[in-house]
Structures are given as C-alpha cells and as structure tokens.
Image (tube, rainbow, N blue to C red):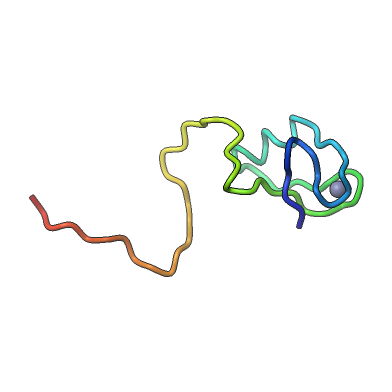
Amino acid sequence: MAPIRNQTCTGCRMKVPIGTIAVLMRDEDIQLCGSCGRYLYLPPELPPEPLPEPAPKKRRGRPPKVKTAA
Ligand SMILES: [Zn+2]
C-alpha cells in the first residue's frame, strides 16, 4: 500500500486523480494507483478536507473510557 500525499502516490510519485481521492475520503472503495498498482490510502495525519463523518470506524485495542452516568 502507498499513502497519498499532496494528491500524489508516494509509491511512484504519480499524481492521483481527484476522483480517486474523493472515493477514498468517502471510504467507499479501495483504489489502486493507476501507475504502480499499489493500494492507495489517505494517511490519517493529513485530513484533506473537513468531511462530515459522524462515526469514524476505528479499531483500537482499548475500550472507550466509561463515564459515570450523570
Ligand atoms: Zn503509484
């Protein structure tokens, strides 16, 4: 897999179509780089746009902190 940076595949330094990035941002489907064939993904530390994501699915080993019910 290769992360996308500045709309560019870091695996081969080729520009990634914005449509491909949009699909990745919406988490609709996986995308392959048209040049090197790597799986593309958006690195989480670079949020490209503030998308309204109500429930991000993340797997963490730790359970969420339980607050005492008010
Ligand atoms: Zn590539």
